[in-house]
Image (cartoon, rainbow, N blue to C red):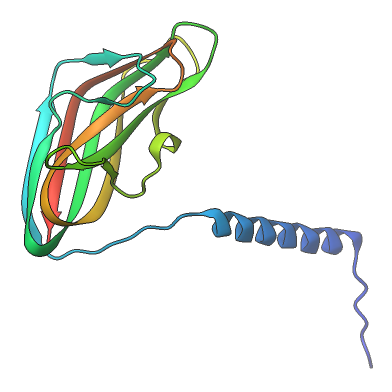
Length: 182
């Protein structure tokens, strides 16, 4: 006895839906930028803290006060830098326009060389908070980034900015730690 399967409208729709999701995932994967590195044991940890609130409405990247840490990588070697920044944040708008509050972690070679974003280097694509109302309250947020760097001395620090000048970005009770791994 032979059995013939007759596709129903429901199973055809389900197959089409699965195919569409798979295709969308493949497209999203094709545009994703992956980053990664590995390191040996922890060699040193530098940390900074700040318990006083600071605020900005700057559209340009600016230094988060009291975050710079100096890291030295010996000649002929490399080091994996792993940096974490946590803080209470407020991202409050003063007008009807919405926007975001962003942070990034960067390393700057001694002597003022070009800034190197730690990975993933997402620039303003990483928002630590959003301004969707004018009644935002303090919330805890964090970011972690890493990158392998060659020999030299580096100043590693956090920068912040807003995407709309009508936004006030407040950071309070923050902690910044930079671990160096072999």
